[in-house]
Image 1 (tube, rainbow, N blue to C red):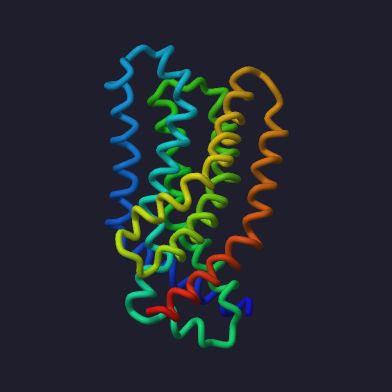
Image 2: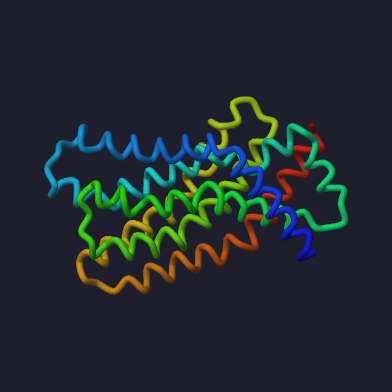
Length: 224
């Protein structure tokens, strides 16, 4: 089972990095969208510094949303999902491998780029470590929830819109506590309670999201 997990993880990572154009587009969207905020709210450093934490998190969330169709859509179209479902390994394990591959190939680069965006928006340097801690705990939860939405939208008309409607409400708790981690650091309050809540959300998503995604994929393949 572990060997199958690693094999699928390696396969999806290779495929993800081969489709580097998609990754570049997501990163470019992240940067361009961040650059629009000084034009919209004004170049006042004080204002930008106050909104920087929320802006970075919202843009990271939307960028992740753009990449969610990479988790299952290609394998659904070429028939690979049917083969995986018929294989001896539980598809829950394979769904977890595909989600981890998505996080490593499409989301981790956003996490690495996020401090640059935060500094560009005049966030105080004391908030940068909290931003990174929050993103490292929160974005895997977003990928896991997104995998469920991507599975539910397989084969649907306007799948991207349906996926956004399904997952955006579920992203809200991660967004709230991700931002409060940064605000606590900027105001010299303890960040550990907020990080523990993000860790609890991740701990809940790890067993539940792959199970839900596997059930949704099985239903989509059956109705194909």
